[in-house]
Structure formats: structure tokens, C-alpha cells
Length: 509
Image (tube, rainbow, N blue to C red; front, side, top):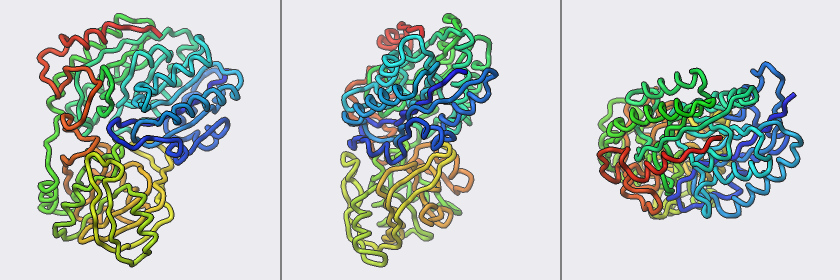
């Protein structure tokens, strides 16, 4: 019986978020080692897909828990956090005993403060430990920045096919199937084509035009003869790394020319779509104006620039300031990550006056703390729930202690720790129902549509400052290759020198 090791080390980085991701952020989501990986997390996300996929093998295969580390999106991993990754990998792979193969769940867009390609670094560390012969199949998010280093040290890479991300378990199952085919004799060969463009997440849905037909072709291709996996990676635009851009990745069973030809074809289909993925920006005041004119409720305003789903700080004050100064019949509901404000609310107690500066402490580059005067409505020892949908499957979320503050016509939910900004559960877990408010703020550019869309009276995309802004010219990029659309005008993407150099390199796995 083959023994297949299961590993997950996953976080999506926003390089422009000044708050470093530390070990405690991973511990908040639960560290699993050995058998705990299966007993505690064996039905969660890609890990659950790995387990289900292995059960579908005709020949017996035994999943072996090795290591599970996951944190929510945020700033770069601290140096000590990277060192901890390495120590945990070495220790737990040593304890796992004999393994025949590995399934590894990554995000594909994780940076360390001293390592721009942390996912590649992890795969390289794994490869050094297990040796060159062991099959290692990795899964990545649709917003990964896949690198040559990642391709070189993984036998094959399998990416999500959906945004909003609702296919984590299915991606894990697809990866298990690729591993089975490798054991059956498949020889993975990767074709990678970089496209010199970045786009905001607001209009990137794979379920509607203009991307729907492209992703349908992508999925159909993966079911074809000799094709192991297919991915169009729309990348995490908030990385500051060389060769940043959309990527097409086709992994075939020895069909190098076919993979390259089809990757080129899909890239050519993606390039013209870019202009249809540019959002119509609305500043804070016109956002609130439109929300107040909306018939029915709630009007959902997406604060994508502060999206915790995109690694933002979750403590922008721009929309809060605008809503406080306005009359909002029916009230407004918003959320903010601010542990010091939560502590102050606990100090003064329920029913007491709340006079404190909130926000602008995590993402202090694009926001500054704002003094508010309100009242403490309620206090909660834990704001937590189990997420299934965009961003996770059976994923336990813990935003720490919470405080509900009423200021003017605004109900402000303060939490200690970031979590998904795309689900109504972030409010419902403390007894706040979004449907009861005229205006509701979400901290997500696109994924919120999966759950808020069915009952939203209107959806409004805001253009406020923030480290996850789709107005890319507002961000201090230093390492990216230029030209890069939309920062630069490009007539023919194939003529871009850095793209030609990138697409000329091939590493057969």
C-alpha cells in the first residue's frame, strides 16, 4: 500500500500590508502535525480533497498526515516565521516514516520579508528532504504567482479553476488524480506562458462573461488525452516581484509541444479581455450617495482596497468616516480589525460611552486613526464560525474578541484578528444580520458576491485608498518588470522583452 504524505502551508501575501505575518497568525487557524492533520483537518479545503481523492484510487493508498499550517491573507511572513516553516517541515517529514509520494497544498502567492518566493522556497526544502525521485504534486490558488522554482521542485502543479474560490476540495481531488497518473507512468512536463498584465479582483469572476468561456475551455482541456492539469492564474497583484502577471500553466504527460501551443492559445484569448476587467471607480461619497438612493436593502459596498481577502489591513476609515457624517435611514453596518479598540470597549463595558481612535493602525500607510464617539452595544468573547464557500471548506475562523459600537447611524463591528471579509457570517456570528441594514460594507473585491449577491439590493464597488487597491498606480511597486498593463501601454504583449525571456525558459518536471 502506498503511503501518501499530506502537507498544507498556506497564506496569501499582500506585500504592501505593513503588518508582518507571524507564527501566532498560523496558530490562530490551527497547527496540525502527524495524525492531527487527518483527525482535525481531514475534511478542510484541499486537505479534504486529498483524502477523498486518494479514496478513489483503485489500488490502496494510505493518507499520512505530515503538517498543516494556514493563516489568513496578510502581510509578508516574518523571518522567524519562515525559519519556523523550515524547522517544522524537517521535523514532521522525519517523523512521518516511509512515504511514496506527497500532496502539498500551497497558495502560490506567499512572500517572506526576506524571501520573495516563499512557496518556491518551501517546495525546494521539501525536495531536499525527500529526494529527487519522490512524486510531489502541489495545489495552488487561482491567484498564485507560479515561478520556475516552484515548477522545478514540484512534479506537477494543480490550480483552482474558480473565482469566487469554491473548488478547493475538487482541486485537492484533481491533484490526487495527477499523483495516481504519475505512479502509473505519466511524465509531467510544464508549459508556462506569462502575460504582462495585472487586473483587480472586482470583475474576475469565472462564472460570467468575459472569463466564463475561457475557463470552460480550460476545464475541458484538462479532461483531454495526455493533459494532467490546466490553470489560468490571474495572480495576486499585490506582490512586488519580478515577472508579475497573469500566467497560463499547462502540465501534460510528455506532450511538451502540445502544452506550449495550447498555453499560447489561451494566453492570446486572455489578453484582449483585460480592458473588460477594469472597474468603474466610485469614491466614498458617491458610493454612499448611490447606496442611499437604492430601493430596498441592503446596498452592499465592496471596500476592495482594504479587503482582508486580498491581504489588506481591514482597518480603513474612509467609508466609515463618510457614513458617520451622513443620515442613513435603516442604518449602516461595517467591520474593522482593531484589537486596541476592542480592548477599550471591554474596559468601558456595555452601555458605556465609547470615545476612542479606531482604524489606521494596521494599514497606517493609507489610513490614519479616526476618533469616534459612540456607545458600546455588546461585547463578545469570541467572533468565530465555520466557513464553507468562497475561501474555504469546513474552515474554522476565529477573529478573536469582538465589540459592537453604535456611532451615529453606523453599527461598527470591531474584531481583534482578520478573517474573511466576504461572508455574512462575519456579522452573523455576533448576532448582526446584514439584511437588517440599509448599507453593508464587505472587505472583499469579488468573492462576497457568492453569498451577498442573492440578497443584495445593489452592489457598489468603491475606490478608497488601501494596500489592495485596484488603482495600481497608487501602489509603490519597486521590483516588478515593466512594461506591465495597466501601468504601461502595450501594443503587442508578445513583443515585451521580459515576457519573451520568461516564456523562453522551460523546466521539465
